[in-house]
Amino acid sequence: MQEIVQQLIIGLVIGATYALIALGYTMVYGVLRLINFAHGEVYMVGAVVAWHLAGSRLVQSSTSPSLRLCVVFIGAMIACALLGFIIEFFAYRPLRSRPRLVVLITAIGVSLLLQNTAQLDSVFGATPRTMPPLIERQTVLSFSIGASASPVTLSNLDVLSLGLSFSLMAVLSWVVLRTRTGLALRAVSHRVDTAALMGINTNRTISFTFMLGSALAAVAGVMDAIRYDVRPLMGVMPGLKAFIAAVLGGIGSIPGALVGALILGLVETFAKFYLPPGYTEYADGVAFVVLILILLFKPSGLLGQQAPEKV
Image (tube, rainbow, N blue to C red):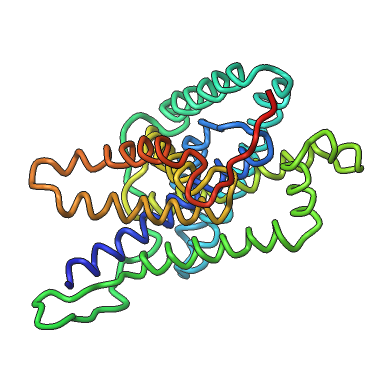
């Protein structure tokens, strides 16, 4: 039982990270009906920016871990928000009236551009690097279940990851449902041309959507950089899995992105735990099996709605 609870915690932490990335996919799709396959690389850029900031004199000279974390997180979010605006303005905005295949190919091109740019020695380099010390990993909660010898543990990084993820999702829900900007976003997602006729600045609303989704992806990138390492290709698999999570929950649905990401994180974690030794690398394939099943039996996703199409 202890092992199951521990894997449950790990799965929720991984799922919360996927959720932050998946929200960017689902928001952009909800507004433009566009799959931004460069979004995984925005997550990677957040980690790279965090690595540079964490090694800077300004951050290293600070004696407060909280201040160091705030500077790194806020700096990465601002940088990725600006990157999201640049991607939308230069890559996607000129192609809105073009066929979707053209935009899809452009998204893949932007993804490859960011990957190769990050591998330049003047930017980051092709070698994986460890994040400079920002916060020391500590166990904040430890408890035993039954007569188990090894306790269930919860680290401060787990708490930080879960706390940030769910807090930011709550803020996002408030922005979308309770603010004028969120009202404009929902109007544009319903119909762009009608929203423009009603006086909504659609270009600004769409840019805001890209910036907001990119800032959320930056938080996920910083958390994974702290927990693991920083690599120029680190956005490939998390980006794909976050896309699968968005499809699983119902792409275009913000609650669906959260539900799908948590389910995918749990499924992936338990697959790694229960697969025999030597086969754990196949656990990544479970995500794609989930994608195939959801497309076969419920293409609209768990919380998505089937939209009728006029022929």
